[in-house]
Image (cartoon, rainbow, N blue to C red; front, top):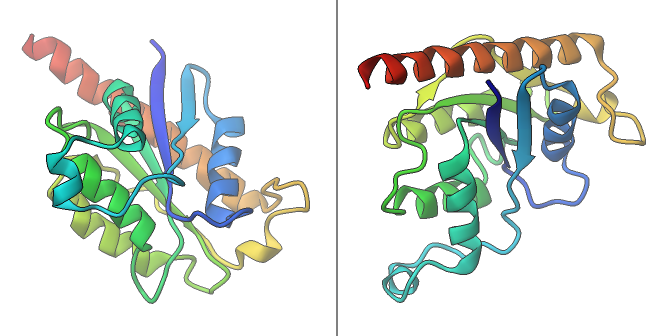
Length: 189
């Protein structure tokens, strides 16, 4: 059974370490897992007046990707001890889509940061935001890539062995949790 993962990066910056981490996840994905990276670059700031006129095409596109996903992977930097506005904005839009594309699905969280904590505070704030979405966040393993500027090479490859192993463990746990949850849904049907 193939597992479709929608990966969402919390930064719009060209060469973002978190986007590099998501690209590394695509390369390291376990057999049977396909990871697609969402493009948030054209998602407008959430505005109820815009929503009243209909969801923008960029939001519809991501909502469709989210609805088709079996699981999610978010990689986020830490901005001022929290999550970036671009990530919160995407979550705000997707939380208003009638199909509730996050609901009941597993989600893994990772972060890459130049700082020593590797984005830990952002991850904890993100977990608070995710409660409303009724997702199943993985509690373990946690992946914090600290000093990220020293752990990626010029080609965007994650070169740090411990971080690569941590990413392998995170993806394996996401696959296992997805299969468990899909099994529960199949049993209930």
